[in-house]
Image 1 (tube, rainbow, N blue to C red):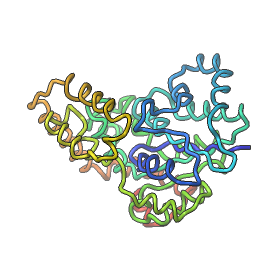
Image 2: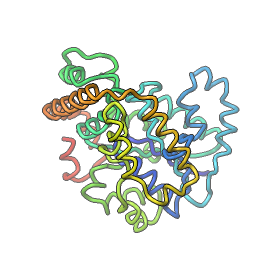
Image 3: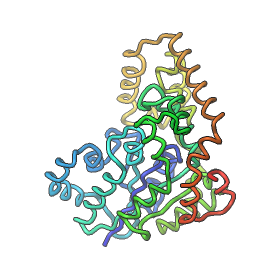
Length: 331
């Protein structure tokens, strides 16, 4: 029976770094997606898992199973699929619960005699949420700092914000996934290890996938992808026209210019970011100020965030033990 390792995020836990630098470059890995720099970036069958209603999924299961069977899986290498939208759709967009998307994926694997193994990355909740907010501010994030603080205080919780925050209950997630794939098929990696203990982080991933650890470490020593500030600077509601263009030019390298899709991507950029946007300097300035206040207020309430997740984090570490230098970020 073939194994399929599916890395599901969390977002802002170096997911892009794993996708760009490790999964698709390691000689021991057969990587089958996601490819954020391509169109379409999602594997088609994964997109359908997210988008289909329960009725559509059941009705089209045979066709979906046949499509799943055609995935280019290897018998000699670990097959890896990485897609943070399993958790983004659960936490941020709230289109489909993680329990349902992983259950659907598992059913498709079973129908093709494939063993599903789930890997997910965690980061202490304050940093994970703080890192996601600027990238989703005024777009897919449908809450604000006041609502988050009220929900953390359990004063006046709203449904969206409660679900958003509870999406970061790692213990609940772990127990949910355990029921679907079982203990032997579920693995956790800690973002903080990548920052402070990169060799240990590399060893953890390499043991999970049974791949060469020295090569893993070498690939992870490359610059991290999609730093938060870089992504903020690509948002037209937070940057002026000149800032957007300057940032794009600063990123240019010869190997990008000579890529086949360079002209296409350049046209898309100017259409989406420049031509069809009304750059109101006062509005952009106000947006940036509001984002700054949002982040300052959230940071001021760091104890509130930590206390909200404290008990579930204690339970989480009973199951997923690690050393004190990592636990201190969560407890």
